[in-house]
Image (cartoon, rainbow, N blue to C red; front, side):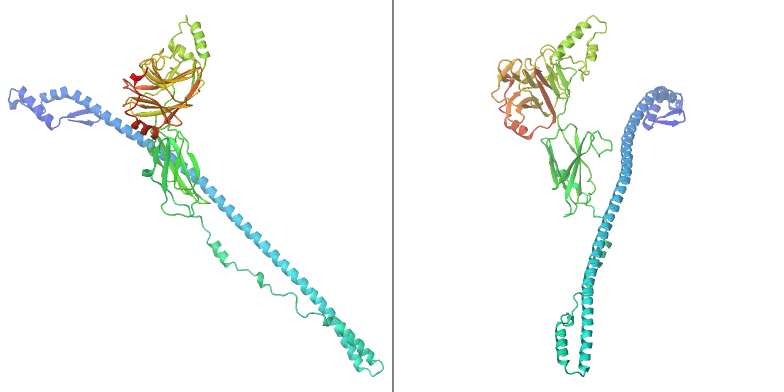
Length: 551
């Protein structure tokens, strides 16, 4: 059946099957006489009147569901367009800034080039001036000496001619001898007639035709090509990520690469507005990089890389998003014992916490405003519990739980504790763990327990049974939980040496649980199950300790 909309009224039109059913119903009402059946008669109107409200309700429900899908599609599309618009606006801002930067760089480079040319011109001009001055001095010195020699020679020549023309015989011999002696000592005969300096300056000529061609060949630096990240070769394991990329063509001028990564909970193309910033890794010489020591506090990590030569960087590659599965949780300060000071993933014993709370209880015991909810709001150290209805641990149950349940899969976390703590425990517990229950003393919790009260001991505890562990007490413990297999194992977090394993069947979801008295500890979440732990679990699957073996 279908509904036709004509203005404010809604008209219901039966489909073919409905129309045949209507006619059959009319036939029965008419006593089997088809002559009494009138098309569009009262029977049709009555049937339509009886069916149309239900049909209209079904039709409205279908339309609402269809409208919800359209609304969702529009919301997703609006977010995509919004991100695209933000990206374009950011591109405009970047374009303006980058254009200004490269123009300033170009101006600076040409100014530097001009400065170099001006300096070279000045140096070469100075060289020419020095060469001219030196040769001028040499030539002028020779010219002066030649002029004096010529003058002396002319005087001797005139004297010799006068002597030859003289008719006196008595003094001729003496005069000839004096002239001869003067000629022997005359400067004209000691003067070198070869110029000491040349007038040729061709050795200081220049030809900048090649340099001119080089200058005419000046152009913008070739930008390195854009790398491509090979997703199939990237690996995520043991809280490390290995990113591999390739270049479209070999480029010997590439000096290094820049890799950027950031955390995200968005599965899809990177958005302009993200909660986490890009982390930059520079100076990478190879086409792959392994990032170690990560904490996967989000579902995904996004990566991008660009190539750089010694002057300019290329464009970033297309970002890729890798899934980073890990068990991430925080501590529930709302249900922790009052003597525990919980800050993020750190816990410290605070002996005054209970006393302050007891004083408040005494003061407000007879007050009509006194209630558990009111007391929780008045506590200056505690935020409201993340799990409504969970009572705060009290008495000697110095316990704090995580805020995330484990109901499937394999998980791993680590806890670093003060080895001087009087008492410390770490493990898992059922959601139903009582507010007076201590870890390991009931059937609803499994833990490893450190005791420094009389003598130091490390035990595995469950259901008030304990087994002493013959191993060195580490500074940090790794906790592995396989919910489906019912395995809870404890490791030396540094060496990954197995300390103890429980083998059980969890009756309901469990939650990481911790206890400390006169001490402190901190939790590290966002960790993947180490590969060495996984392989060790496969090897030890048939030899794990069981709950029944605890004594």
